[in-house]
Image 1 (tube, rainbow, N blue to C red):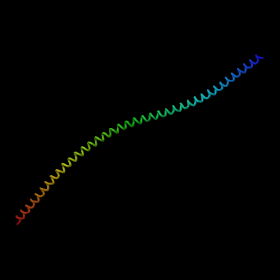
Image 2 (image 1 turned 90 degrees about the vertical axis):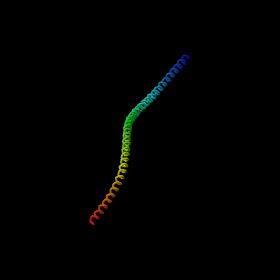
Image 3 (image 1 turned 180 degrees about the horizontal axis):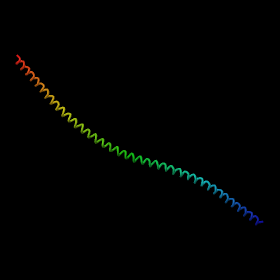
Image 4 (image 1 turned 180 degrees about the vertical axis):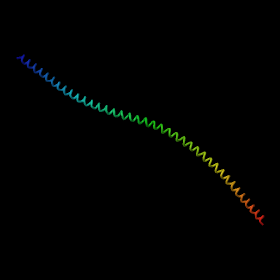
Amino acid sequence: MKQIVILTCMIAFVFTITLMGCNSDTGQKAELKNLKAALEKTESERDELKARIDIVTQARDKLREQLMEFGSSREQLQRQVEELTESREAAVATAKNAQEQIDNLETKLQVETQKISQIGSQLRQIQTAIAEIQDKLNM
């Protein structure tokens, strides 16, 4: 009898261990399933991040191109500003020379106007003298 009890306990013990093993196998399968789901989720998130990185990289490249274009445009504008500044300075110098010439011509005009006034008054004196002489001759 003792042997039957021992055998029965051994069988019960083996079944218990076997059932525990089955439960852990089921737990492992569930954990494996959860891990696979987490892996799929992580992979999809990774793929989304890669797509976002590609978009950001393309945007960055476009911005770099625009920056390069702006740099060359800025250089062109700087050259134009320098040319316009030189032209303005030349125009100011030309205007200054023209003003000096105008001032000189005004001075000459005043001198010539005075000479003409003097000649005009001399002409009137001569005409008056001629008229007097004619009056004396006609008399």
